[in-house]
Amino acid sequence: MAAENTPMIYETRAEWMDAARKRVLLFGMSGLGKTRISSILRDGGWFHYSIDYRIGTRYMGEAIADNFKREAMKVPLLRELLLSDSVRIASNITFDNLAPLSTYLGKPGDPALGGLPFDEYRHRQNQHREAEIAALLDTPHFIDRAHDLYGYDNFVCDSGGSICEVVNPDSRTDPVLSVLSRHALMVWIEGSEAHTADLIRRFDKAPKPMYYRPEFLLECWHAYLSETGRMPGAVDPDAFVRWTYARALAHRQPRYAAMAANWGLRVAADEIARVQTPGDFRELIGAALDKRASQAA
Image (tube, rainbow, N blue to C red; front, side):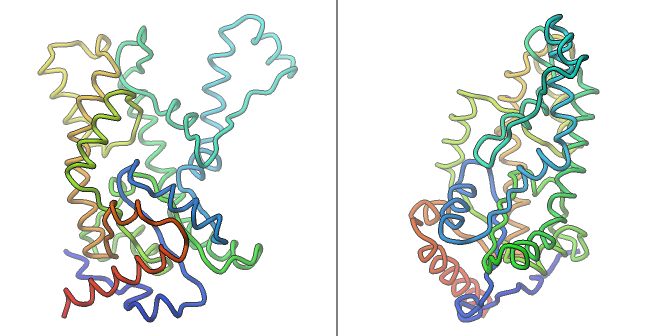
């Protein structure tokens, strides 16, 4: 059942411009400008809530730190120091450096190449799914906290690229989107084919772990094993995630589009790239609301 354009918290340019408290949630593929824009807004007096940061600290911080400790326990000197509480190992995750979270998620394949057994990889993927949903549902709490505790009127939620994997954008009763849309304007940063090609080139140079829907992951894993003739424990982890990435982009695009159509609006990544100030961003969103209204007329 389609969401049929669920009402947004700002339906017109005037409502957006006149709002004393502006609240937006940015979504789209990683690398298209969500965190850059969030940083610009933060420097301009907005509260910046990062979903990936929340996942890596509140919901998966212990698992990430325990993974570091597990590796450290293999080193005799570090093992002795850890057992005597002489050293402390912790993640230093930041808004701009999410490497600890990515490292924990890992990649499946040959352990000699840094790969994880597929069952462990799926376990960590499921941990991430549960953590991402929880972090997204924390958004209203952080909107209130930012305003009541710190005095921030304006709020930006910098969501992870995998938000579209943990929601059903075509369901009017989706438990995550129904909450988010009541509290923030959902804004899709839409990339072009050229952006997609560039993202693939960048990923090919430095493949990174990412979250996939369980069904999509299983389909890709079995297809890759069949195509390459590899046994699960002999898969090159980087080769698998490179092979999967372009498929993941194609898989996510219609899900993002449905989120924008049913729950929010879209802005082009090229337009986002031209934003330099919070004022530029306000005007861009106002123009996007005008465009959406004219298309609906």
